[in-house]
Image (cartoon, rainbow, N blue to C red; front, side):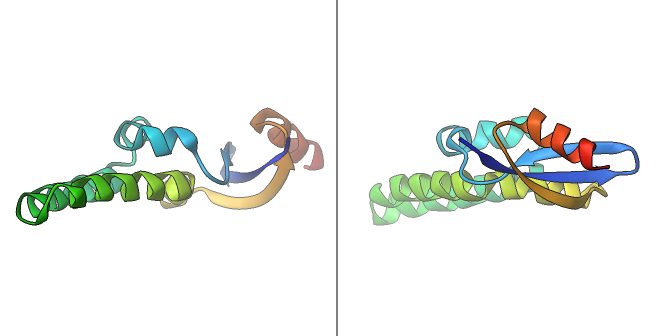
Length: 114
């Protein structure tokens, strides 16, 4: 099974990032964000969940559970994109997208073309 990987470069450093849905980000949203140093996104998530928690006290707890599911779905869909945006913010430039069976194979394919 092949996946699409984004190759990012900054001077002599290369990062390989997988694209698409992330099940780990879906199930472990806040922990996944913290492990990947996505501080800004984690803070926004925390504020969103906090507001939904206080709204659920007034409107019913279904709002809170719905917001947790919705935020997990957003993390699953866009978590890897958030990580790529973080790399770009740190000065990395996306140079190529490669379909490969693993990140190592994507890196080898990219390096063999250089």
